[in-house]
Length: 346
Ligand code: GLT
Ligand code: MN
Image (cartoon, rainbow, N blue to C red; front, side, top):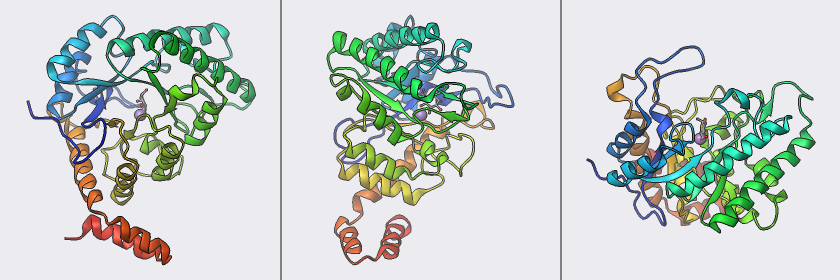
């Protein structure tokens, strides 16, 4: 088994991670699988083989019942669980969202699933539970009262937070992952700013355990700059987790290999993470493409990791004093040229 990939001088948690769903059977909204689905627990050794230190999973992929077995397998592989997450988007009952649903019975069901997922997060030894906004949104205006939705989300997250505090102190933290659209036309908690606002509305004792899991491609789908989004999380002390990938323009969610579309921005992002001494885990959320043969589906992880390692090491060599000088002289085109030199120069 190859040794885990580490980032030079990374502070705190080192090693890379990815979701078990990243190694899927090649489905898309217009076509079924193009290769056999690999059983979820069999994907753990594949992640380890690809040099990952961490895995991530939904409650639909590694269920509460499967968790003890998964923990055992992971341990034998030297893998750790970086985050666990309740799926509020696959089950048909959550077709119009869970926490934001108009139906109190569905909201209750969502809450029950979330509390169970908190226990499974702890059982798997993860420090973080993620909430991706998924189907929390609307396709038709006035389908839900937006003002009511904020209250529902606040109430739901307060309850989950209170449960975690009571049973696990501050051991389990929550990272909300924003996305602007897809699967809904409009999603609540669409961007980093919306999530920070929501957190500011939570009860004071649960606020410290709520933060974000920004995903680079989600910022790009919204037409936003992910380096700034991540800087904002850092400034707020709320960068609890991160999902790295790439996106080829403002279109459907592609989950392309990290480093593929915007290497210069990715270099800048590495500089930001290094300077902030980001100590949390760095994980990919990438999708093995439909056309890749079964034998090669881990390529999406090895390519992402190599790109990250190269960019990270180049970022370590970026002369911070030069950045300051370019800023002071207002030579911003030259600053961009300097970054390009760090990226492409010999
Ligand atoms: C889904 C989504 C991702 C989230 C996952 C966690 S599921 O694939 O596109 O961005 O991180 O729920
Ligand atoms: Mn993600």
